Image (cartoon, rainbow, N blue to C red; front, side):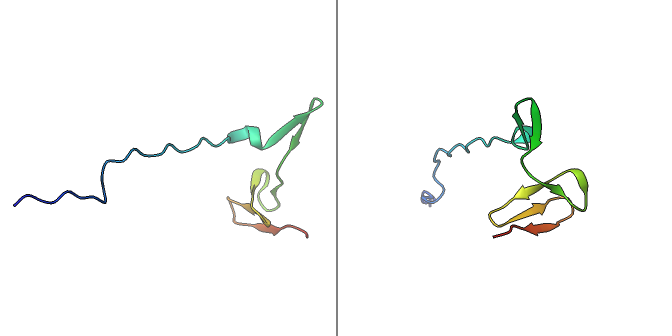
Length: 71
């Protein structure tokens, strides 16, 4: 007896993921021949470890340190 066609896993074209602008270009801003950091660095790890920018906090991906934003 032949198997019925599986309607749940039909061959549908997958949507392409949008490219995120990332890398070093989002961590620094260049204004008037000066380079400034757009995100704070980790207080525990020191310079070179940027903190992730969340809605209400900054978080270090290296050590897990979290700093909440002031209201």
